[in-house]
Image 1 (cartoon, rainbow, N blue to C red):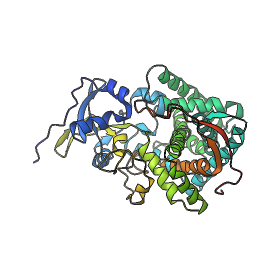
Image 2: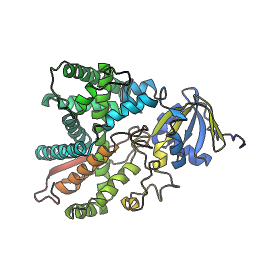
Image 3: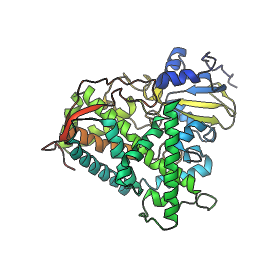
Image 4: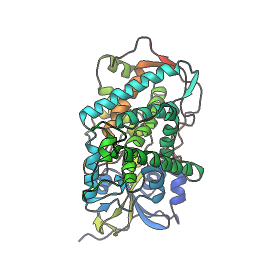
Length: 429
C-alpha cells in the first residue's frame, strides 16, 4: 500500500485575502514556489486543496470522486450563476438539466447565432461612423446582448438594450469583486431575475409567443426528473445562464482586439486566411486568445468520498480548487506559455484537460461549459469583423491587463477611434 504523502502547504493563515488580492496568478505562483502541482491552504477559515495541470484537471472531473453541490459560494450564486442553477447540481439531476442546455447547441442553432452576431456587428459598424471614439468593451457588450436575446427568443425593447446589457455585464464583473462592484452585480441579478421570471410566466400563460427551438421556449417548458416544470425563478436562472455567458464573450472580443494590436503580424495572416476561405488560422487564433488571456481563474468542487491520489489523501467534504488559469499557462503543457503563438494549435491533440478556460472534461456529462462551441463560433465571427470588415485607429492608451482584477480587462477598456466599415471588405459573409 502506498504511504500517504503530506500535501505541500501554503502557510498563510488564510488564503482568501491573497486570492482576492492576487487574482489569476494566486494558485500558479504557489505551485511554482512549492514546486508542486498540488498544495494545501485555508480559504474562509476552512481547509482547501488547490491543484493544477492536466492530470489534476482529469482528476477534478471524476464524477465518482467530486461533487459540485455546496462548492459554489453563495456570494457567487447571488451575483454570477444564480441559485439552484445547473452549476450547483450533481449526478442524474445534473445530467438531465445539462441535456436541456446541450439540446440548444445543434449545428443549425450554432449557425444561427453566427449569422445573428455577424448582422449585429455590421449594424454596430454603421452606428460607429458617427462616433469619433468608443470603448470596445461597452460596444461589444451591447452587440452580444442584442445577439443573445435574439437567438434565445428573449424579447428586448430597443430602449432597454443598454440597461439589460449593463446588468448582464455587471453580473460577470462581480464574480471576483468585493464592496460596491459586488453589490452592483448582485443588484443586477435581482433585477434581471425578476424580468426573466415574469417572461417565463408569460410564456407559460401563452401571453408571449416564442419559437419552439429557442432557449426561452425550451427552458420555460423543461421538466426535471420529477416530471414537474422548473420553478419559474429557477427557469429564469437557467435562461440567464444562456444570455449572460454570451454577453461575457465581449471579454474575449476585447482580448482579440488587444492581440491584433499587440501582435500585428497576426492580422495579415488572418486577412489572408479569410480571403482564401480558410478557417484554420482564425481557429488557432481564437484558441490562443482563450488560452493566453485571463477568463476563468479557478473552479471548485467538494470531495464526495475520501480517496488517495498519487499518495495524497483527500478527506471527504474537503473543498478542492482547480487552477484553471495556471493550467492554461503551465510550462509543462505549453511551450513558452506567456507568448501569443496561434500556430501552437497546429499540433494540439484536442485534449479536454489542458485547454480549459471554460472548464474541462466532457461537454455532455461534466461541468464543462455547454456553450463552449458557441463561444468559439462567436469569437471567430467577431474576429473576422475586427480584422476584415472595419478600419479603426488605436490611440495611445493603457492596454495593460491587471491579473489581480477578476475578471480582467485592459485598463483602458480598449479605446478605438474613427471606426468605419471597410469600403472593400477583405472577406465576404
